Image (cartoon, rainbow, N blue to C red; front, side, top):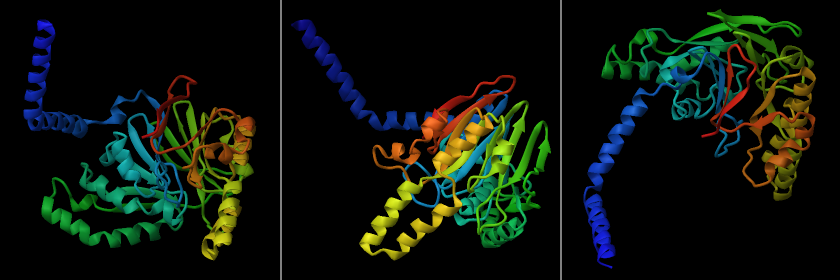
Length: 356
């Protein structure tokens, strides 16, 4: 009994001391956490190869685990971004990437949900990294208007940050973005838009009417490959250029779920939502159609992204797939933070993160 009482007294004393010193302990933990966080560089931990992470798995509809469309691609030790939707750059930081190391952004098209985070991404990349030159933004013709417009919008901010922090943090030579336009390739053709140090990025035409131009991108590096469709209907051109890729990142909209939204909106008298839910179906790809493309192209793995509508109800993923899992079983439904690695010199496809 005495031993129990002594042990209890010791535990109580430790608890009292710990409680009295809780502020100091919290401070020490925060200090250590900040040190690790500030010096973190996830890219430096990756083995040589192609790597992909969803910095935004959703579309224009708000969702708790699917931000605006944003895909991070790492080739070797270089970080690139495809599209820059809402919260994309913040998710990058949450995943351990350093936005200041972004080498370039590739835009698939100019819908608002694909570009509404671009100004913030460029600004954080500039003021948070040692970048003496603007952020290169690759895109089909028309990208100049996007880049010039955002540079104009952020012009005062460039001056404020430079005046406050000086050249060490915010050199004006690195502010903003630089448009890198290219002509949309014809069907059946690829256009090389980036070729350096073993990485080749090629653009292909996709179909997203009335939005034109609209493209997808194929990344190839040291024998590994992935293709990101951007927004599109099902298209033979995508199947052609996805043939044999390790990872197909395909947009997906579930018509059956949009029909439910349409009917619910009509029943409640919300004509605007009913109209939108009806209209968006005809310029996207269903999960079943994406699965058919993956199967017929013989890809290694299918990653659904640009998920519409948001998947927030238990059991909704089965409704979203609507049988697609039987057509192509090697799939992942994207969420923010989902990541894959394709190590060079292997045929491995490794899912390295299930999400944030």
